[in-house]
Image 1 (cartoon, rainbow over the protein chains, first blue to last red):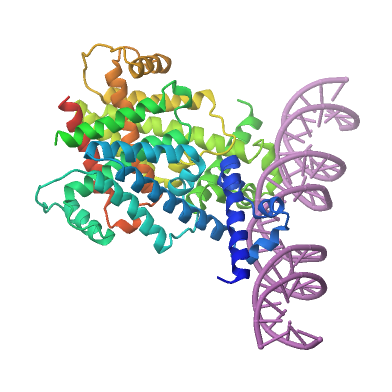
Image 2: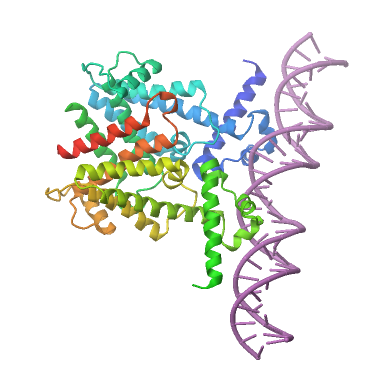
Length: 217
Length: 217
DNA sequence: TACGTTCGTTATAGCGTCTAACAACGATTA
DNA sequence: TAATCGTTGTTAGACGCTATAACGAACGTA
């Protein structure tokens, strides 16, 4: 790579790093191009040499986030041996990832950035997360039923590149994700604040319910 | 009430109505005090006679939203006779409410407004939603176990003013909410867009899973 | 050394929140 | 009736934000 391009890439990374700091401190709205520049010892407009606009920067943050989350999920799943263990690993790894940077989780799965359109490689990363959960699903020998939802699930699996999975397995992985997300999104939004309930215990209970639900199918 | 105060209240309501329009069209960030004023045939700063600042307006929108959602949930539950019917009613009513104004749902349960602190009567309304779901739960004669989570649940029920419910019932109601929210928050954020999956079918499946899960306990 | 690209600067347009100072209006009171 | 006071609107402006344009300096290359 060119020397110039190396520096360019460094600058881009530094800007994104600072943007993540601002995200953690003040939320999405707190990410300001001017402020990032100031912290880098540079004026605001200078950064427009590196990012088309503020939305482009946010988009990259989202893409990077998906990649990071996919890596996290895959590593966690790979560390397990039994289906139950893989599911527990994945679930708790995803939660740890979310709690490590709540605002980043919200950036990915919370209120969508207006006008945001996910780039293709971001969709790939999102699919990798689902694929990791699919790997956590155990064997299933049920036939591919012909309910409308089953057909949609089969098509979804094909488009994701996850072949050889039954609709039941696909639905299972999706259900795991939506149930975990239900708890996580409320936790990162601090909605359990006044309840006196420990989100940790709630999450553990839901994970164990998922394990029990799959094993007794 | 004073004549002056009546007009004042009318103006406040009109401003909030327009704010909801802007919310529906452009999301939370699209709510602009200046723009609201313009649409009311008034300059921007005039509205500061009615709301301390933009955040105060958003806070009222959130409070109103909780009240409206609580009414919706209560009405739906009251229309059912059996526990299963009450749960189905509540679930689909909540979903209809969310889809009717996706951005409002996100305003309540999505990325939190920075610095937002829920007023007491908003917490009451939120509790009414949980109480409605509790009403949908059927009879339960299990003993109040002494697990940490059970104790927290019991305390939560007390603080909500929902006495006479077992920890299992409380956990059930909470689980209903988090699972429905998991699907709903993804649906309103349009996360199923590229999947080819019909959120309606997914939601129905999850509701029926909840019904089956409770009845086979 | 000369050249073109890249990168940073300042100036500026435009929009947003929000405050301050001032004018107009209505209701109350002397 | 006339003076007064609180309410509500106005304009002007401070300040921050995104984003563009015009300009100049630095850099690698020929």
